Length: 629
Figure 1 (tube, one colour):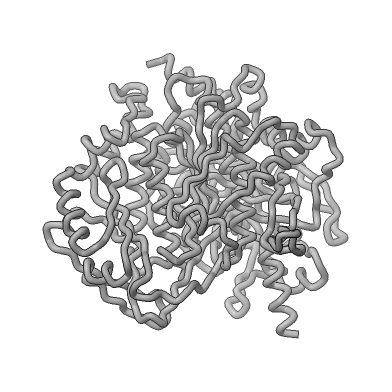
Figure 2 (cartoon, helix red, strand yellow):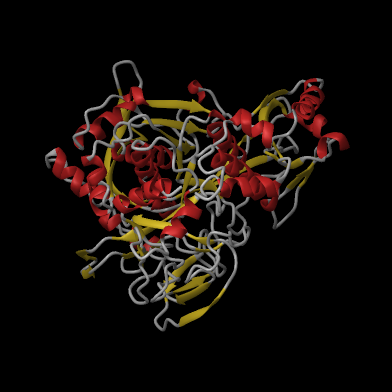
């Protein structure tokens, strides 16, 4: 029975049934194995950099919409070329290849593990019960400007590296979209028109804005198949070709990335498919750049791959909007998997690269996750996704619906925060519900433990205060939850970056269609190549909402002469207007993310942030702000 249960859980993981944290044991690392390491540097002045970031979206500043190129950023805030040349010379002598990311905030290194160890005087420290560490030492003239060394690992050849990731996707394979519908009806029920209609984007379409002239960056750890995109587009009535999809491989090359992943490949591939399908269909005339940072060849850690892809996208300076729906486990218990960079150092490095993005006029969107405030399970609030104040963190909601599920009629009368305790881990086959009934889905939200409350959130009603309900009890023995029969209401104050910022539909019960090719073969063709199984599924999760928001930003940017840039200081100001573009979901009852609820009379709550967006009004507010300059 135990073996059967293990098989069922493994099958379930490969079918993308729920939001899941991937844990993998990769290949043994040899000392001659090629590895990728990143070095993040300090800017010339962090205070001046942060002030410049805010000034680019302040209509009263002379820097308003005065965005920098990476070259200008390097001259103004990056490390001097002489310092970087000294670093490169030191590493070249030790047979390590170096590349400077445009902007002079970081170096990308590639070399053998042996040479990396010697260059960094690296020492591996295995520790029981806590993550192992790799310490390093650089010459004083080089180390003084280093924020973090990311991806450096050393140890005995028998050691195994692990990679933890979190994908913000929930799926219900028991519910299939009705592909017999005509394209327009299908799109309104399951596709881009569903998002556009609910959030008032259709009026921008009517004015001819479809993302033309824009590029959307997708930070991913997998690949997407052109044939999947063609089928998805055709079903939604979008007449397109894959030429507007551009693939950038930031760790492995194209050939290595196209090999079948040996580590839970179906989930990342579905994540990549839905990201590209969502963004490309909501903005049907925008180009899509997918930055694929996964390594089949075990070249680096997942945090390093994530950093590499982001820095590559920002260094390229092609995309005025970037979205990601995956992340290393940044604020979750026991999930951190970079040996050489501490959580604090990595968070610092990530914030700096995102500040560079803001100075270039790039808006960055990050999914908030689908486990409420409990990213990896536990009694303590934790978040596996980045909580950087320089990203627009996108939460999830549930649209109104009535359905009979597990012999129980569920009715949602108006849009609310995603917090689903009515049907945990809905079954596909017999046995799934019994095994996984302690998994619940809710919009990621709460307070960051790493980042303080940013200046744009300070003084906003609802920020740093909360109302919560203890709906769930955690069972440490099983790492699952049970419903609390006697929930209590909690109120109080807290500090830290509040998240999310905005929200949109992310419930699998009211979700979107995705078409993808799984890693599961249905046989072989005449040439002996595996025939991949194809799926339509209805999915939910903030994985959908983040690329949709990026696409909406591309729609708005396609009607402007300058990009909108760093959203957050602007949208928190707009939220305080009488004619706000936001619908704050601040009801106290039937409106929670498994813990945090709305707070009546406030503009902000930790379940849905500022709420949902009327994009017609938001576009007008951005344009009116330009006109008032």
